[in-house]
Image 1 (spheres, rainbow, N blue to C red):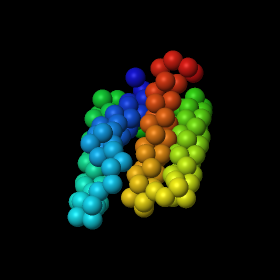
Image 2: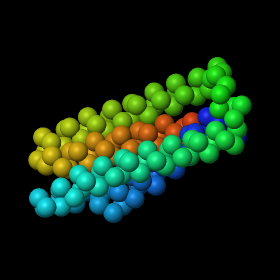
Image 3: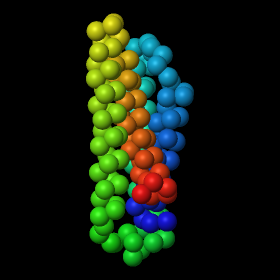
Image 4: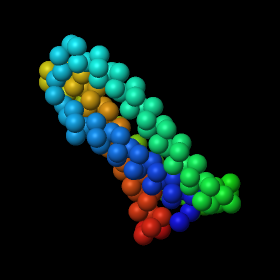
Length: 139
């Protein structure tokens, strides 16, 4: 398994673990004012934990394949990254536009923010999932 595939796995599992847990636990329930401050605080720690997981995972991946980690992207890697990034970005953008449109239907600011977060989360999962699939099977 190449370093870039390991990197995609680290990002996919880290995102799924951290933000998948957030959406399962909190969903889209409308919190009261006191809970909103707690959710903002928890978002900060979610981001910190995601960074720690990704940095530690990339360090382990680089230690397991040091020559591959230092190598430049070849043409195949560049195509995989470009195609998966384009699809993931399009999904995130479409989701963010739908989240903005939900404000016209009476969604609160908290709900719109959660929809945008879900759109970015889904776009990134598709991006890394597509990279894994392309490294494994498609290309």
